Each structure stands twice: as C-alpha cells, then as structure tokens.
Amino acid sequence: MTALTLFRNVTHWRTGERFTLAIEDGVVVPAPERPGAHARVHDARGAVVAPGLVDLHVHLREPGQSAKETIETGTRAAAAGGFTSIACMPNTDPVVDTPAWVEWIKRRAESAANCNVLPIAAVTVGQRGEQLAPLEALARAGAVAFSDDGRPVTSAAMMRRALEYARPTGLPIICHEEDPTLKGDGVMHEGFTATRLGLRGIPGAAESVMCRRDADLAELTGGRVHFAHLSSSASFDALRDAKRRGLAVSGETCPHYWVLTDEAVGDYDTHAKMNPPLRSELDREACIAAIVDGTIDCFTTDHAPHTADEKSRPFTDAPFGIVGLETALALTLTHLVLPGHIKMARAVELWTEEPRRLFGLPEVSVEAGSPADLVIFDPQAEWTVDPEAFHSKGRNTPFAGWRLKGRVLATLLGGRFTHVASDVHFERPSVESNPHVGAR
Ligand SMILES: [Zn+2]
Ligand SMILES: [Zn+2]
Image (cartoon, rainbow, N blue to C red; front, side):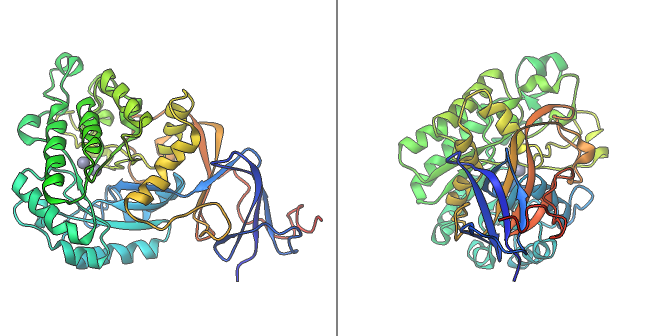
C-alpha cells in the first residue's frame, strides 16, 4: 500500500477552483479532513492539475535508430513534457508491420515505464505501399491505429483496401497526406522564402489534394481516416468539408504550425525543416481558425528526433523533422491561450480528452476514482528553451532560446512521479522534514 499524497491549493484545470488533490494507491481519492501522520503533503499554490497529456504522434525511433532516440529517452522526454500516454509511429528499422514488433515495443515500453506507449502499426508491408500489412493481426497484438507516416499511401486503390480491412478493427488509418508528384524534391514551403533561398518548394496543395481523396475514400469504404499534422489552409478546409458531410474523418495539427511560418527557415536553418513544411502567414492563421472553430480534433507534436550530425548537413540533405514533446504545452499556453485564441481548459482538452476519445483510450480525470495519471503545471512560470537540457536525445528544435510561459512541475503515472522539475519540492519529502504533516 502506498502512502496518501496530498497536493494542497492546486487549481482544477477545468473549473479553476482551488482544492486539495489526494492520491492513494495510484488513484485519486476524496481528500480526507484529517490526513494521517504518514501522508505526504505538497503545497501546489499557483499550479494547475490536469489529466496527463496524450500525444498520438511521436517517433520513438526504436527499433533500429537508437542514435536518434530510444523508447527510454523518448518516454522520459514525454514525461518531462507532461505526457502520460504517447502513440509511436512505425517508420522504424525494421518497420513495425508484424504482431511480433508490436509486442516488442509494448515490452520495451513497460520496462522503461516513464509513460504509456501505444504502438501504431504500418498500413503496408515495409511501408512500401505495395502489399497490405496484416491489419487484423496487428490490431489483436495491440496496435492502436495504422499509418505509413513518413510517407503517404500513394495508391488510392491501396488506401481503399486498407480502409476496408481496417474497418472491422474499428481503428483509424492515420494519413501522412502528401502527393509525391506535387512534392517532387521540394524541401520547404513553396513561396517567397524558398525563392529567395533558391530551394525547391512544396505547395500546400500537395497535402490538401490527398486529404480530399482520402475523405472520399472514407465515404466509399466506411473506414476511419485521421489526417496527421495538418499544415495548409486548403487542408483545414478539406477537413472542415469532410465533417460537414458527416464522414468518419478527424485531424490533428502541431504547435509549429500555429507558431511559425516558412520565414523561420531564415538562412537555411535545418531546425525549421520538417514535413509538411512550415507554411505562409495565411496558412498559420487558417490553422488557428481551424483550432478555434473545432475543425481540429486534437493536438500532436510529431516529435521527430534526429542527430546533430544529420541536422548539420546542407539544408537539402538534412532530414525532415523537429522534436516537440518538451515544448508542446508551453507553446500551446504561450501562443494559443495567452493571445486569447482559446481558453486554457480547451487547450488542455485538445491535449487530453480529445485524443483519448479519438483513440478510445480510458478516460482520466482529476476527480476521485480516476487513475492518478496527471500533469501539474504552472501556467505563469516563464522559462527559456535550452535544447541541451532536453531529456530527448534530439536537440533539433527551432525554439532554442525562446522565452515561453507555462512549465511542467510534475507528471504522475498511476500515482507515481514520472517527472519532477529539478527545482520543485514535490520530490518525496521525508515525513519528518515536512512541516505540514501532523498539522491539524
Ligand atoms: Zn508525417
Ligand atoms: Zn510523423
């Protein structure tokens, strides 16, 4: 039996009320009027408690690419970012396209134990787009969705078949939407900055034409389509239209699409190179509008760590992708909530309840009876992004040196601390040294 843990004066993420959060045996319990002498008591004045964040789009890089990230370091980064559940993409080496690899990831994640890990399995064998992966067997092994993320499912006939075979499993196909003929060998958004730098561009239509196609295929098959990392104005429109038609289509976007534009590429900065690329100011505004009007179903990070060596190559040769787990909450609070685009409660919903609902994950709350999978954060605390301090192996962020508001103080999974900020005093104080204990 674990001792009772109390967080006094903590603010409820939804109601804004101050209360005492009590946790015992990994579960939220009603706060006792007179805690026993063995209770651990923390003063959490100024801090907000919310259900642990969920990220449905993470690249953990294992198996096979552990120089970029491992399940251990990726889940530690997740815990530091306030996440208690993450779904990992199958574009590893080898690709996660067999039940054995799904089970391997689950076992590895359990021993790391920093965060729940939900494996996403490939749509096609080797993500080559030629032969359908055994979707039903992958679902039985514990896959939570299917995706060839990193590349599109180019053939419409293959996507149709995938949706038909996925349908009985009830799981969505997560679509990395990109028309390869429109993308060509583009490396950034097609626009003024690309022209200035002499780089090949990728138009927003490379994404949106595939969104339109897959919305139609969702209608044809009755399968579930989820658009990954939406970036362009026309794609937000495609998702909005699909919803109006009543189709089983959902979509996510990531912090960099509402914070940055293609201008962040500046002077060939590979830390602003990701796929889909950072787009125009109009696209950025359309992204915020799609969040505000409810078109966007949830937020994800598309956390994509790479080594410093890979990112120090010339812009055209460097890999696409940035890390995101340890800056996601602060970018949301600083760039969506603070300017007044959405309320804090809605921001939290988009990182917790909405992704849980989309993937049918168990509900988590801060109310008595819920598992204590929680994040405690200070929405007022300012900090400077220092990539060297990341728990992720990846240092590839465009936000190095940025001042952000909103800091994760602690993350709990099943009532156990999976992360405590280094300067925070939540860390298991001994009963003797705690002045609150026994005070009645
Ligand atoms: Zn992708
Ligand atoms: Zn991705």
